[in-house]
Amino acid sequence: MLLAKLFAALGIVLATCVFLRLPSGTPVDIYLQATYLVVTSGFLLRFCALASAFAAVIYYAGSRWLQVEWNQTLGIVHFAFFLIAIVLTLGAARWTTAAVDQQPEAVLRSVIPGVVAICSFLLSGLVFAVNLIWTTIRFLHTR
Image 1 (cartoon, rainbow, N blue to C red):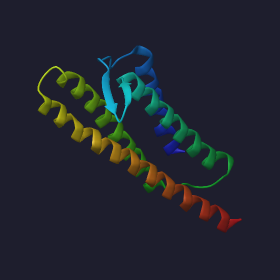
Image 2: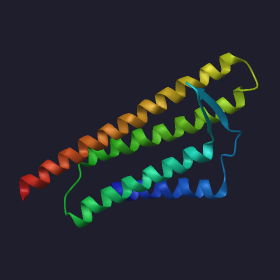
Image 3: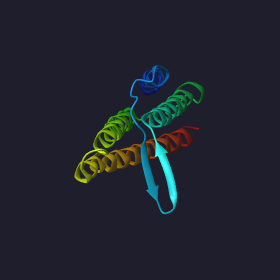
Image 4: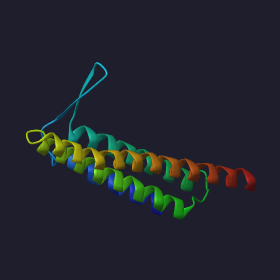
């Protein structure tokens, strides 16, 4: 239940930031292999709020409706990786928008936190998958 509360609180904070339009910065234009993307920090916040709400519902459903116990340690690690990914993603978006008008080296320096944020987000998904498999095996073992 603690994990559901953590992710729900994070989702509420992120949704409030989206509603209040707190991190309003200029959008980042990305051009990759004939695809032109415009990414704003509001889009990133919406995605993170939705992912956080999804994790909260999954953790709540598992603990309340299915009466299974999640591994708390893996859940806390999942939350920590997810929070690190959010902070670094928003920081990289902010640094990139601030550095676009400056030198190209400043843009390159903002890529490193972005790559670390993507890796952290993927690791949080991996830890969640391990926790889900662990819980499913324990649930099927007890039934």
